[in-house]
Length: 413
Image 1 (cartoon, one colour):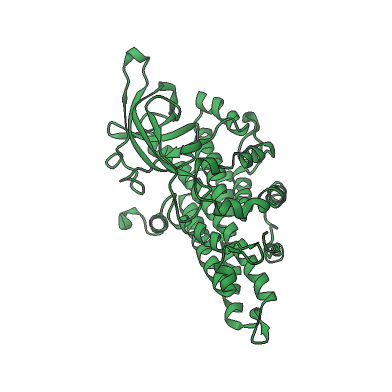
Image 2: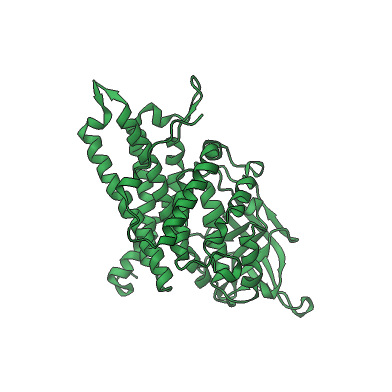
């Protein structure tokens, strides 16, 4: 039994006044979906350990049926054809992450952004075939760049997954061998967009996860984001048809970095959603709980801390929205803005959830109070928040990206 639903403080502290009407409509639609579908099962999703059997395929189907996967894409692929699809996508992601950040990371960041936007940005048969299928929910995809010894450094020098030409006897194509690590959705997925070394450069290939020579490991057991299943993938001389190249041979790094820049905006949006959820719960507690004859909220220390957090949430939300809007208006180099959005949102989620636990005391630290059957959200938000500072480019790397934009590569390297 979850505790009472707290008031949404964003409704009076934040205004969507500068957002297009279509984006405001998307926020209202996804919030209603989240309240109706995700909130009742959020505690179960956020606290159930990783396993293939725990994967919520029912939620995936409900998201598909509700048209949530149509939001990012053009009408020609079955999408909604929005004027500002990136802005709508990350606004939706914030609302989903308010309740289930791990599931949002897996089924929207991983599926709709990293996989879907990679396919959309690369014209050709792959886009025409796979994007409509993604919108219809006909497959689950993975995006594989990281390896046991390569994650931040995505270079041909460090990449150990190798694709070699298969030869004319197979009609061309590639033979892939290697190992990928931390790959979201791989244990329950159907295809994997895989970054491989091809000679002295990198190439992105679409690999069928059910093909001969592919082995996927058991889902990792992690500190948080339990609903985001990650596993190792082994490729042992796996045949990949020539038409499964995304973009061009040798252009894989550009493909990967383009998707990750968008994904970083998504991490910022999810961090904003987690911070808002922790903030709302803590504010409700401070308004109700009495200590030494006065409400917790009467103590100036907590007034100032949460005034700062309210400011931080406003800033983080504005940063991811501005980055997304810029991408919609003038697609191109949005790396500095995406990096800022990721830093702000991910670090805010950790800071707000930590302070929320502190002000709520034992009610922040506990997962379930067995005496009453009540469940509490803050401990899972705190666990889930930490990965945002690490994945899709550690925040230290994001600061390098911002510093390069400030000082130039000639100084920063």
